[in-house]
Structure formats: structure tokens, C-alpha cells
Image 1 (tube, rainbow, N blue to C red):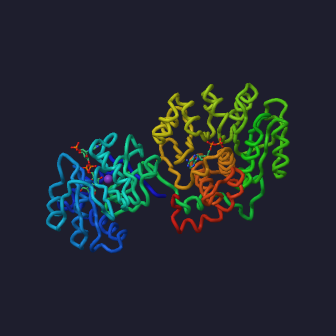
Image 2: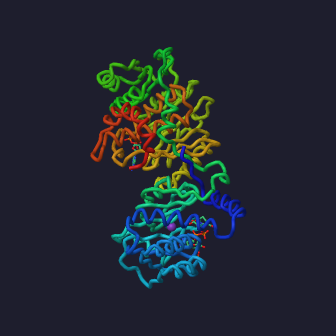
Image 3: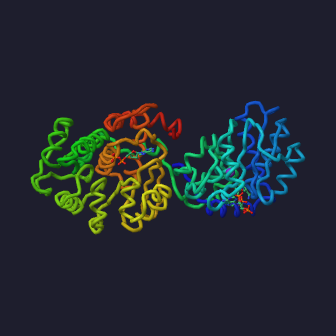
Length: 487
Ligand SMILES: NC(=O)C1=CN([C@@H]2O[C@H](COP(=O)(O)OP(=O)(O)OC[C@H]3O[C@@H](n4cnc5c(N)ncnc54)[C@H](OP(=O)(O)O)[C@@H]3O)[C@@H](O)[C@H]2O)[C@@H](O)CC1
Ligand SMILES: Nc1ncnc2c1ncn2[C@@H]1O[C@H](COP(=O)(O)OP(=O)(O)O)[C@@H](O)[C@H]1O
Ligand SMILES: [K+]
């Protein structure tokens, strides 16, 4: 599990560590780590041109000390001092090493963003915002110190302009905002410099699963397995108008390794599901009742179901069972009208996108998308369920646990029907015995990986994503060696 922390958590750990060290030692560690990464990027340090953007805090101090390190090795380093004050020791070291103070931004091979780090609040002010824009427009490689300036280290919010880094060198521990969009999309490659903070860190704020974690959690059949023991998943999806959603949800469930999928629906989706998936056991419903449906270990309800009275009644019946339920799509609209349906003892995993969560919380969708963690946590608190919030960074939140931030995925997944596939995958993992948080996080990881494999730089369809789920599972062992990076 890759863990990450808020700015306050990092600051508290830093204070404890600093008390055990001589003054300035921590910054030296941080700056040396930063400089070594910069030198690696430059290849040849001697004669290279480096521009250091320096804000008024310790982030600027890190950047100045790193600039001094590079200047001592023959780089031509200039510093643009943007703050109302400048880290004194850092500046003195920088000047002693032969660094020069610049009046304006010149040509450079490498720009070091030391404007602000974990001490920033709100949108970047001037002249920082203009400098960030100019750095983004420059030809140079851009390395952010600790956090790309303009990204909120604790949440990933970007309130105005932010530096778009090719690489971010973060100190001591990963910050939450580096893993959660929109912030995560400004980070580039991420390098962690060990400054000895580890023993002083509290429980993490968020965690990202690795391929190895997912591999360890996935239910796999053993010699004693039979189809019932592997987990039977019920899918209540599709309607006369939306038949494809049923096909895709059943496909996601089957491809994720369900022992059996029981599909329930009306005649038109039933015909489609039967034609696409002869493996599914189908009950055609005349009334919204589950009486004639055999036993299942978990339900998926909602994709393409519609929101009329019939659908409402079916959602209520599914939620009245005593097994885990994954609630998606139209079922989310229905529970937004009657939140009491979510009050049950067995686990509930809801899988909204920002628009659906906005209806559940009564908050505009753009605010949900801009502050994904905050709203996922709020939904957990208000609704008492596990929340998988889909989108550019999918997050899974549950009471009393670090939020899981999904590290896989690709924007090619932004196409109709991929969410239906995800719901099927999640349902199968619930039926296989995973808890709601693990089921959601593993489903998002596999779905994101399958999306990348299916896309490989070109458009995909939702059916392609379902078809690639077994490939994604197979690749987990290889991925765990390469770290499961974002692309
Ligand atoms: N201590 C150590 O030994 C270690 C420290 N480390 C390093 O220290 C960094 C944290 O340093 P920090 O706490 O000094 O805060 P930091 O982010 O540099 O700047 C805050 C200042 O910026 C300003 N400002 C704020 N908001 C703004 C805005 N929106 N737009 C524009 N300006 C804004 C405001 O100052 P003002 O200009 O308003 O006077 C505020 O005071 C951390 O990220 C890491 O790099 C690590 O290397 C480990 C060792
Ligand atoms: N920009 C993006 N980057 C990565 N993944 C995305 C992006 N936009 C959407 N997705 C993913 O695509 C899927 C879309 O699901 P959803 O919104 O429910 O669509 P549908 O209802 O058409 O199936 C989700 O898994 C979501 O996380
Ligand atoms: K920075």
C-alpha cells in the first residue's frame, strides 16, 4: 500500500524529527535529495542552465540549497526571488556557491519550482501565478519541490494556476494532494526523498493499493471450490429502454470470475443478456419481485434500470435482502429520493460519478469533482455506506479507514458503459467475500488496468474493458514489480 498524508500530519512529524536533529539538518537532507534528482535529469550538470523560482518559505529554502549544490558542480544557476522575504541561509549558501540572482526569467534547461510547498493556502497569488504560467509555457524541464505550487498538498485541489511539473520531488512522505486529481495531474513523475520522517508519521490520510495488494486480496478458486462457494452475484439492471447496461454489468461480473451470475430484468434486456451471455442464469420479471430468484451472495442494482415506480420497487426489494449490495446509476437516483433505503445491516457500496454524488449530497457537481475526497468522506458520514466515487481519480471511502485512491485508469475510460462494467466487477468481488472497501478498491484497480490495456493509446469500448479484465488480473504479478504507475 502506498500511503500519503496531509500537510498538517507532515508538519507534525517534521517537528518531532527536527527536535532530534541539529538546526537545518532536515532541509539539507531534503535539498541534497532534490539536487541529486535534478542532476540525474540534467545528465550533464556542468554548463547546464538552471533557473530556481524561490518563494518566501522553506520550500524556497530547499530550492536555494539545491541550486547551491548544482552551482558547486558547475551548473549556471539563477534564482528568481518572488517572495516578500527569502530564506536567509539558503540564499547565503546559494550566493557562496556562485549562484546569481536574476531579475527576470531567462532561458533554462531546468526550472526548479520552489515557490510554495505545504505552507500554501488558497490560489497562487501574484507574482507566483504569472511565474507558474511562464514556467508551464517554457521549453525547460520543470521540477517541483515537494508539491507543484498551486496544488493543495492535503486535498489535490487547484484553486487557480498551478505549476505543471515533469517531475515532483517530495520530501519525507507522499502528500495526499499528489495522488488525487486535479492535483495529481500536475505532478508528473513522483520521486520521494527519504529524510527520516517514517517513524514519526501517524496513520495515513489516504492509501493507494499496489498490484501486489490487489493480487493478494483477489479471491481465487481452490481445489474445494464450486460455483456456489466462489460466489453467486445477482444483477438487477437494464430496462425496456436501456438494454446494453444489463449486458455490460453481467459481462463485468462474469469476466471478474463470478461462480455464477443471476440476472433479473424485463423482457427486452433479458433477450439481450441471453444472446450475449449464455453463461448467465436468467429470471424474467413480470413484477418487481425477487421471490423466484435463487440465492445470491451479493447484488448489483441500478445500471440502466430506469427510475420509474417499477424500478423503485425493485431497488427497495434488493436493498431489503441481507447480502451486500452495490448500488449504481439509476438506483442512485432512486436512493437519493429515499435515502432510508440505504439503512440496512449488510454492507452497501455505492458507485456514483460526480453528478450522481452531487444529487445524493445536494452539492453542485463541479464542486464534487474539484474536491473529491471531501465529498466522498461526507457521503460516508451522511449516508453510512461505503462510497466509490468514479472519475479521473477514483476514490473509495469508508468509515474509520484511510481513503483508497486508485492509481490505475486512463481518460479513454470516459465513454458510455464503462461504469456498468465496473459495477459488475465490484459485485463479483463482493460475492466472493471481499469487504465493501476492498471490493471497490480492487474493482477500480482492475477496471483501470483493463482500461489501459484495452486502450493502449486508442479508443476503447466498454465491452473491450470487460474483455480485458482477465488480462488485467493475469498481469498483476508483472505489474507489482513495475509499481502500477499512472499513465
Ligand atoms: N522545515 C524543514 O526543515 C523542512 C521543510 N521542508 C520544506 O518546507 C516547505 C514548507 O515550508 P513553509 O512552511 O515555510 O511553507 P512554504 O510552502 O514554503 O511557503 C509558505 C509561504 O508562502 C506564502 N504563501 C502562502 N500561500 C500562498 C499563495 N497562495 N500564494 C503565494 N504565496 C503564498 C506565505 O508567505 P507570504 O509570502 O504570504 O509572506 C507563506 O508563509 C515544505 O513544502 C518543504 O519544501 C522540507 O524540505 C523538510 C524540511
Ligand atoms: N477522465 C477520466 N479519467 C479516468 N477515468 C475516467 C475518466 N472519466 C471517467 N472515467 C471512468 O470511466 C467510468 C465511467 O463510468 P460512468 O460515469 O458510470 O459511465 P457510464 O454510466 O456510461 O457507464 C468510471 O469507471 C470512471 O472512473
Ligand atoms: K513547489
